[in-house]
Image 1: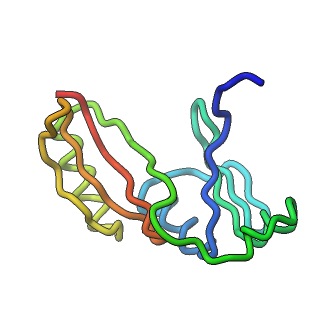
Image 2 (image 1 turned 180 degrees about the horizontal axis):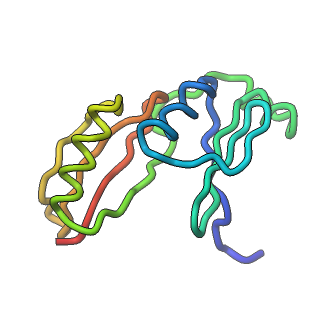
Image 3 (image 1 turned 90 degrees about the vertical axis):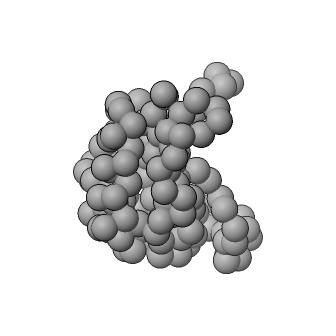
Length: 129
């Protein structure tokens, strides 16, 4: 096996809400859509959303029949400048992202801000400073 990620998938019970969030709030464009599955236009690693029901149907694994809880993944979106982090954060919060931590200079040398999607996954906007 080559240890390289080819796709990141979010599995949810709120398919339409999550699809709307990622298209209308974050601006992803749909590349492929099937019932309860959507893949977005993305350079590099593929990015998709599907439902627990789809994953249970494909794998028969019982974990897909249980409600998910807690933080399940983080996506980090790199911006070109500190000002872009601030502007993008304000724009996506205005469009419906849940604000978690407003933009701030972090001790690890980045300006970062955190927001959540409808499933409660906390994501990051950042730039190196």
